[in-house]
Amino acid sequence: MKLNKSLIGWMMYDFANSAFTTIIVSVVYSVYFVHNVVSGNSGYGEMLWGRAIGISMAMVAVSAPILGAVADYSRAKKRLLFVNCYLTVIFTALLYFVKAGDVFIGMLFFIVANFGFNSANVFYDSFLPDIAKPEDIGRVSGYGWALGYIGGLVSLGYTLLLLKYNVRWVFPAIAVHFFVFPCLPFSGSRNTVVPQPELTTLGLPGNGSPFPSNIFANCPSLRDSSSAISSTMMGSRR
Image (spheres, one colour):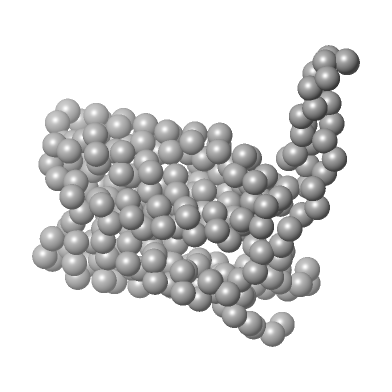
């Protein structure tokens, strides 16, 4: 297997996004939200955190088939990947402004960031068959997975230093991490276009309303979205 810019960029994206799952979802912001932002009665913060996760993942479940179909048929896969990546970066950085009592914006900013993160993963996963040979897919995926663990450990390292000063500094630091490492190297990855399927008629015979009922057939992004959503619902991949 010969490494090229696209493969390295794909693997570095895993290095970057592990910082979000490790620090924001699992270790720091989840605890900060429950105990500092919400506080109050025991269990109330956990309930709100669970609802924020549920709402963001429901949004992904609803939008992923539509966005996946659009990406596969319109040369927009990489564009949609980075739109969602930037969405995650912006709203992760905005978590800095969430203070004690800011329950609504604390949930809102996280919901949008987590939605962007998981939506981006749909397109990220679908890139692998485009940039790697079939016999190399497992190896490239394994290298990306390994870099993801390293990225998570690196983010934990500087997070421990920032926690000594101000916990809220951690959130823009993670945003910078997520911006720098995937956006620069992955910019060279290429798009592929799946041929447009023929339109079929949906509904009762003779209704005369053509609708692309098979628009989701042969959509790589849609197929990848199901595994991405289910794995996130069960917990972080790390």
